[in-house]
Structures are given as structure tokens and as C-alpha cells.
Picture 1 (cartoon, one colour):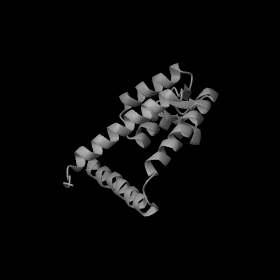
Picture 2: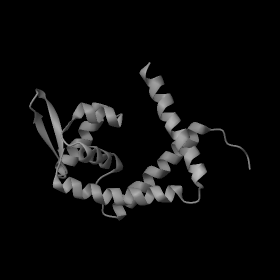
Picture 3: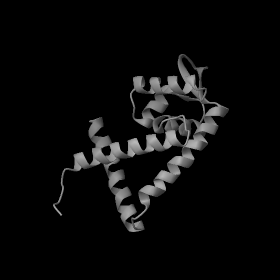
Picture 4: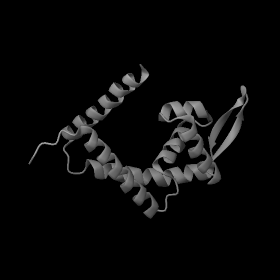
Length: 146
């Protein structure tokens, strides 16, 4: 078998296949949020009332992308925007009861897919894989900053 060193291609292809697969499974399981929206709900469940800028920073998305995600979550009744008492110009985002329920549905599907990813690999292989992914995050976060 020929060695394939097109790492960027392999990473992007794997990411796209995973996104498509996750989207299809979430739809099939009647989950109404995307993985990105589930990420926001997860962060809000951990610490409710976060600001848009705090969420944007943690998720590494720009403000316009986050605004669109929050708009869709709000229209679905999964989050609420509230005034920040310390800054009239800022908004805090709160998860609703419906958002918590939707998050639990999404988490069950995401956990199952996570197990599917690990299937067929040894624990050592998975640890190596996680190490590579964590290294990517550190390496390219630094290069983006300066």
C-alpha cells in the first residue's frame, strides 16, 4: 500500500466525513441542534449566563458566526439573551429548560459516535491519536497568535 503523506488532505477529508456522519445521525435521532450548537449548550450548562465574547473565545469562532448560532438557538427556545447588569452593551446567554433537554439528547448521540470512533483501535493507539490532536491544538493556536 502506497504511503499517503497528504496530511492536510487526510485531516480535512476525515473532518468532513465525520461532520456529515454526525449531522445525519443527529437528524435521524431527532436532535434539533448541530454539533456546534450542542457545544454552546454544553458550555452554558457548565456555566450559565456567559457573555457572547466568552463563548466566542472558548469556541474559537468569530462573533458573526457565534451570533448566527445563538440566533438559531434562541428561535428554537434553547437559549435566552439577557442584559448584562455590569455592561449595558453586552448580553449574557442563558440556557433554557428546553435547551438542557435538547443537550441531553445530543450528548447521548455524541457519546455513541465517540465510541464508534474508538472502536477497532487499541487504548495505546487512541492515546497516541489524542496526543497528536492535542499537539495540533497547541501548535496551531500559538502560530495563530503571533
